Length: 137
Picture: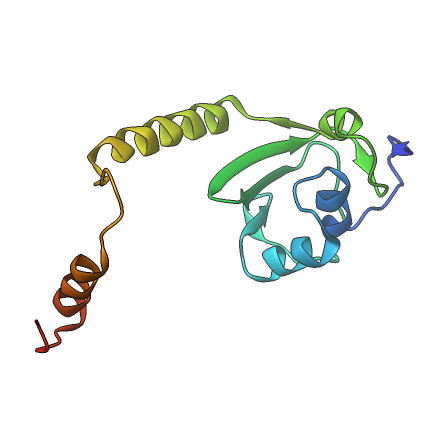
């Protein structure tokens, strides 16, 4: 993997996000940027904007929001161990993600978990409640 550290190297934002393994394909990276899910130095970015070392990127990956600082530039996707050297996640971002995960686990306790699946009659009753059918037998 070629990691560029010289100051005159230019790497597109969508290509860098793909190389840093935040998104599986460049197409997904591009659509996330165009959809406003990626901020570059606090402003909405374009997929073709150039990435610089030391820049701050806020992005949405799955259901998690991350804030990272660019350490190195690369336009080639390689091993995950090498990709992690391209960026550093901020401490605030890590704390926020841990707090969100704990909240999701806590919410799972209050969500109903039936012991078994409803039978045919119970499914029909649930459907009539949900959709308001008057055909209850």
